[in-house]
Amino acid sequence: MKRGTLIGISIIVTAAPWQAAATPSDSVVRQVRSRADKAAFEGAILIGEKDGSRSVLTLGKNPVQPGAIWRWASITKQLTAVLAMQEVARGRLDLDAPVSRYWPDWKAPAASRIRIRDLLLHNSGLPQPDESKADPDGVPAFYRSGAVAPAISAGAFCAGKPRAEPPAKFEYNNCDSIVLAEVLARVTGKPFARLLQERLSEPLGMRSVGIFRVDQPAASHVRPNGEFSKEDALLNLGVYGASGGAYGTIADLWKFDHALLGGRLLPRSARETMWKSDKSNGFYGFHQWIYPSSLKGCGKPVRIVERQGLVGGIELRNYLLPESGRGLIMFSRHRPTNLGDPWENKGFAFDLLSAVACRR
Image 1 (cartoon, helix red, strand yellow):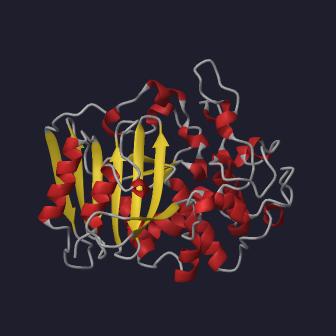
Image 2 (image 1 turned 60 degrees about the vertical axis):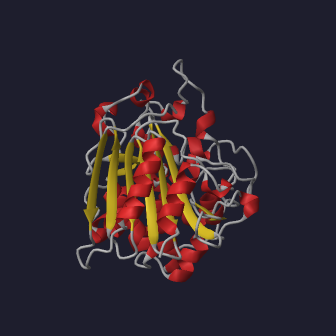
């Protein structure tokens, strides 16, 4: 990315309504802002504290509004995993049961062998939407504006010829979340969008959060500052559903993160099961990456829970720090963005996490 000086910066500091402010120190905010300036970052960054307070920095030549509605892209999968684990904690969903137990008429060839766990770990071997036939614009047919709703694709494309026998080697696949949402619909009797609203949006006061629908025109799929790339116009974000169809503000995402870190969404045992990862599976747990990073100044490796999102012209990162209860969220208005990967112990995201995590 071309480097330059950012000429517009806005900072909003907000405390949790039930507690006094314990927002990041001016020093931490200055460090984050300085690193973002050097990286020519365009978008929004949120620094979250254990008590729920937060600082939101909006940066760039034309800063977005702090309350801008963003596509959450694959961060949606993190919400989906929590909804699934709530059913596991209630004893209504068994991680090692096959999909066919909950969806008997699902036509996938391996319906009786693909476990719920395989969907959450991307070990299902289901057909790959990214490999569906591309149109003249190069967009896979699965994501084209005329594509079908997730509830239909779960029983159609995603139930087609598998790419591998389960449990398969890890391969990132949107069909896994889309099928899981239909399993949850059958277990709870509620479609994914309603489940999200009743279990997360309403209880946590996430008033901006919703799920795109296929019957919405592409132009109504909000992107900060109203900018659209050629790719944006070709996609129908409604096809993503539980795999990447959520939208909302950066502050509302922190409400979800804070509730998850604070044990308000899952029992500790269920949360730790969700956050268990293995190097052999790319450190991928249940729809999120969990790994140690030797952040600068912390003295010992820090456990990081990460969820990435990429769609159209934006890139997003959601970082949770379980041991401190803090969080860091980055919503970038342009992609590709050189955010780096903290597990490599270097890069932009690594530097920001070090500033946020390695302090008393």
